[in-house]
Amino acid sequence: MNPLFWERKRVLVTGHTGFKGGWLSLWLHRLGAEVHGYSLAPPTTPSFFDVLSLETSINDSRGDVRNREQVSQTFARAQPEVVFHLAAQPLVRRSYADPVETYGTNVMGTVHVLDAARQTPSVRVVVVVTTDKCYENKEWPWGYREIDRLGGRDPYSNSKACAELVTSAYIRSFFANSHAAVATARAGNVIGGGDWAHERLLPDIVGAFNEGRPIRLRNPGATRPWQHVLDPLSGYLQLAERMWDGGSGRDDDGDGWNFGPPDSGARSVAGVVEVAALLWGGGACWESDPGDHVHEAQLLKLDCTKAHTLLNWHPRLDLETALSWTVDWYRCYYSGGDVRSLTLRQLDRYLPLRPIE
Image (cartoon, rainbow, N blue to C red; front, side, top):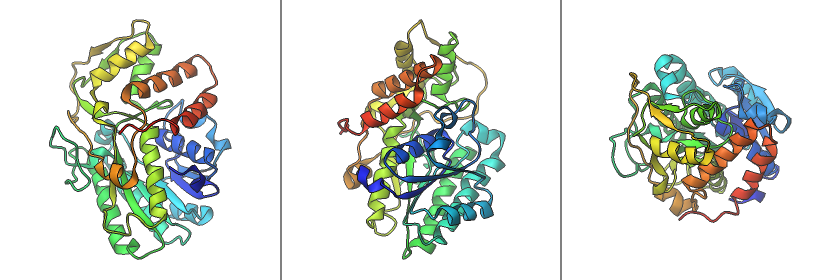
């Protein structure tokens, strides 16, 4: 990353009131960018956005990416140079409960953002954030590459694969020789302070531990590529810098990019909980939830050779450190500490860290 690149850049972040969008917006503000956000209200109470009072740091606009006219008006008002599209319905289990909302937000929302971007001459870069779950998961022991087949058996994963296809079609139909470069970014399960999404592992862990009860795990053996939220976000920023100079979306190196942890970051749900329990202390523990549950993949890993080679991007936080930073954040919050100061310290500590090769 080149922090100086972001000074005075006009940046639009969709989904800025969410967990990843909030961290990204704060980081961009810290780097000196003029940040505009477009999103629904924060999806949880409490939320990272509200706890850190991010409305005081960025231009905060509220709206739904399913509303084409509002999206277009936001682009016209902000005149962004760089766009990070993170607005989404991000939960697998919720996608089973409301597939129409999931497809409407994740597919047509992406269409609306890309269509507004192609009609806004100020736009130079668009990064569409999807997920590692966009791949057709065959439970392989090796990581998925950007050229592997897209798929998804649940509405969330499938809708994100659809968003990838939409983006690819827009690149080839409208952006190949245009004013803007477009690419997608795929990351795994992210952790970090300020996530309170329902039925997501770390929020469930700290909620249970803070209340002194065991965390109930519905799928303890499932293995995921866990990473601290700052690792993929640093990848998105590095990718945007490369695209500004003419890479990706304008040449033959492909449009999708994986940003995952090293192999040591692939750990079972139970393994993550056990480390978090040791960090939390006080006899924290877990137990199995034997009820009926919707299908979830058991094994999923990413091959990030492309980002390592072409961006020189590497994660900086191993899983134990990522969990330690996350537990520290929630401990600070639940004890009434200065969470904003802690968050800014973590941002400032991140970039000087040695990359994990």
